[in-house]
Image 1 (cartoon, chains in turn red, brown):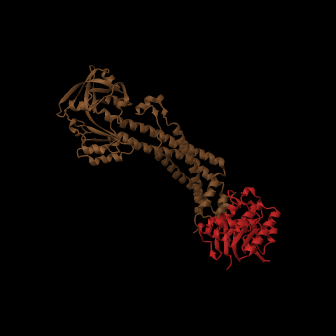
Image 2: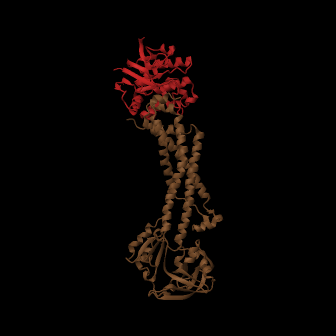
Image 3: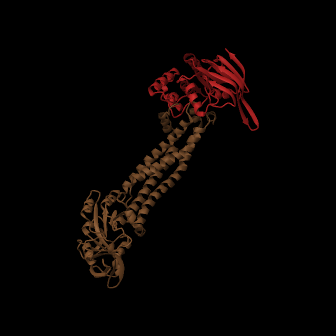
Length: 227
Length: 410
C-alpha cells in the first residue's frame, strides 16, 4: 500500500475572469520510506500539491489517499485528526509556536494526541538530542537561530512517528551550512525511522539529496526521476 | 476522537495572554475598574436601601406583624386581637425571634390649646419596644415612657410644632372605643422624639399600652404584635409563626405591610442587574477588540496549530480559555479592590452635605455600604458569562480559518 496516492488531482483558483490551474490532473503515487523532492519554478504547483496531500487544502476534483484513507472529502475536524496522526509538517518559516519552549513545541503534537507527560518528555528529549538541540530544550523560538528553529520543527514533525513528513521549502530561509545540516538530518531520519519525506523546493542543493525527483510545471508533473 | 488536551490549551492561553502584556494590562485595568465599580456602587445602593428598609421597619411594622385580618382595612378597636396566648408566647420565645411587642394602635385626634391634628395613638410597652422600634433611641426632649402603664404622652417634634405646644403641657386625645363611642382624655406631653422622616413625627403619638386599653375599654386586647428576627432579608422562619395562629389572626411580612418598600427591594435587585450589565457592555467593546486583535495577530500561528492537528473546536476553546483567564484575573483584582475600598469605608460615608435630599429618601446622613456575597457572585457570574459570549466571536472566527489560507497570511 502506498503512503500517498493522488488520482487525477485538480486544484483551480479563480482570479477575476481567469482560472489558474494550480494542479492540473496530477497522478502520483509515493511509497513508504521514499525521499521525494518536488521541484519546479514558483507557481508550478509544488506547494499546492503538498497542501492537498496534507489535507490543508481541498482539491477541485480528483482523489487524495493518505495511508490508505481517502481524505479529499473529509471535514475540517477529520482532516485535523488525520494530520495529527499521519503527517508531520515542516514549513518554510513561522514553524514554531512562539510562546512554547523548544521541548514544548516538540511535545505539542503528542500532547494534542493525548500521550502521557513522561512519555512525551522522553520522546521529545530523545528527538532534540538527535537533532543536536538537547541543551536548548527550555529556549523559546525567539532565542533560537533559523536553523535551530527548523531542527526543532523537524523533531516535532517526526516525534509521533507519522507516515510521512511534508516539508515546504524548508531551507528557503537558511544559510548554506544550516541547509546542508537540515538535509543531512532529513536523510538520516528517513533512513533511521523509515519515514516518507516529501519536500518541495527549487534549491538545487536540496534536490541533490532526493532519491526521487518530481519536476512540476504549470500544475503538471513533467518529470519523475528515480535516482 | 482525540480528547481535548486541556493542559496545553491552558498553557497556550495563559502565555498568549502575556505576549502583548501592555494590551493585556490595559484590558485588565479596565476589567478591574469595571468590576470594582459594579461591586462598590452596588454596595452603596444596597447600603442606602438597607438603611431605608431598616428605618422603615423600625417605624413600627417589625419584620413580621400579627393582626386581625380586617385591621389593615379598618384599624378600629373592633378589629383587635386577644392578648397573645401561651402557645403564641412560647413560639415567640424561640431563637428565631429577637424581640416582639404587643401594641394598641387607633386613629385619634390630638388637640392642644391652639390646634388640632389627626394622628395615630399607639399604646406600647416600652420595655418590649427596646431594640424593636425607633422611639426610645430618638428622644430629643423630656423622657421616654417608663412602663406599659405610663400615662404620659410622647410626641414627634413636628407634631409639637404643629400643635404649637410645648413639653410639659397638656393635650387632649380623642378616639372611639369598642362601642364606637367618642372617648377623650387629657395627656401631659412628657417626651419629644425626632425621626428621620417628618411624616413619622406627625403620624404617631405614644403612651403606655395599658393606658390606651383602659381609655378605650378594650380590656387586654391589642391591635398588633410586631415581631423582629435576625434579618429583614430573610423572614421565612418568622412566617412559620402562622402555624400557631388562629383563623382571626393574620401574619404578614414587612414587605407586604409596606408594599412600596417591598417593591423597592425588588426594584433594587433589578437595578443592580441593569447596572452590572451596563458597565459590562462598556467593557465588552474593549474586551472584544483585545481578543480580535489577539486573534488577528496570530492567524499564521492558528493555521500552524490547525496544520499540526488541532481541531477547530480546540482552537475555539483555546481562545475562550484566554478570555476566561483574562476575565478571572480582572475579576480577582476588581473584587479585591472593591472589598478593600469597602473595608476602608466601613465607618460610613458622611453625606451630611446633601442631608435634605437624604432625608427625603428616608436615609441617614451617614451611608454604610452593604457588601453582600450574592452581589459579588452576581457581578462575577455576569462578567464571566457575558465575557465568554463576547469572546465567542473572535474564537469562532479563529476556528473558521482555513489552514492553507491562515498559513499564508502575512
